[in-house]
Amino acid sequence: MQSKLELVSFKLCPFVQRAVIVLKQKGVDFDITYIDLNDPPEWFKAISPLGQVPILKADGEVLFESAVIQEFVDEITPPSLHPQDPLIKAKHRAWMSFSSEIIFAAHGVVTAKEEGEFEQKQVAVKEKLARLEGVHSGGDYFAGDQLHLIDTTIAPLFMRLDFIKQLCGIDLLLGLPKCKHWSEVLLAMPAVQESVVPDLMEMYRMMIVKMDGILATKLNDG
Image 1 (tube, rainbow, N blue to C red):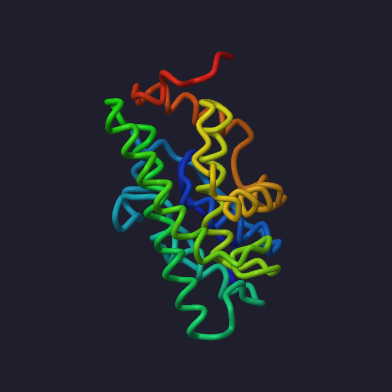
Image 2: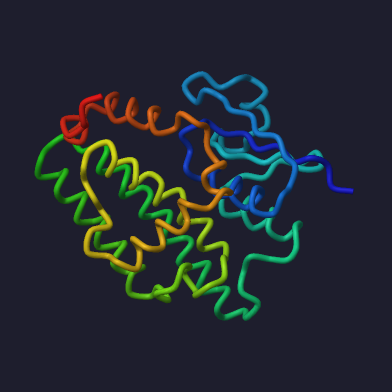
C-alpha cells in the first residue's frame, strides 16, 4: 500500500504547485511541508539530492524535479491525465518542458533592472506564449475539452501572470485570446485555487519589491 505522500517546497515555488494541482484534482490525501530556502533545515539538506525544491517523499524514497514528481503522482493515481496515444503524449511532454522556460522568462520580467531589459524580457515572454497560442486547440484546455497534465503544468505560470496584471497593470496575455481563455478556465478550477497558500499574491508583491527592479516601480498603490 502506498504510504502518504509528502511534498517539500517553499511557498512561492511555481513548480511544486504543479504536483499539488494534480493531487488536488485527483482527491489524493497528502502532506506539504514548507521550508525557508534561505535557511533550509538540516534534514532537508540531508535528503534533497540537489538541495532544491520541490522534493517528494514516497515510500521511504525521495523524488526530485517537478516534472518527474508530477508524472509519478499521475501514474500512481489512475486514470492518467496524459493522452493515451504515445505520439500525442510525447508532444504534450515537450510543451510541458517548454512551459518551464516561460516561467523562467516571466521571472526575468520581475528581476529586470533597466527599462530596455524590462521591455526585452516582456517580449521574450510574449513570443514564447505566442508559440503556445499557435498550437492550442482553441477549447477550454490545451487539447480540447479534457484536462491533461499540460494544463496542470501551465496553470502556475498563468497564476503568476495574473498577479503581474493585478499588481502592476501589465497584461502579458494581451493579444493572445486562446491563452487568455485557457488561463481563465484554469484559474477558476478549485484544484488550482486550492494549490497555493491564501496570501500568495501578497507574497508575490513582496518578492517584486525585494527584487527592486523596474516592475517594482509599476506596482499599484495599496
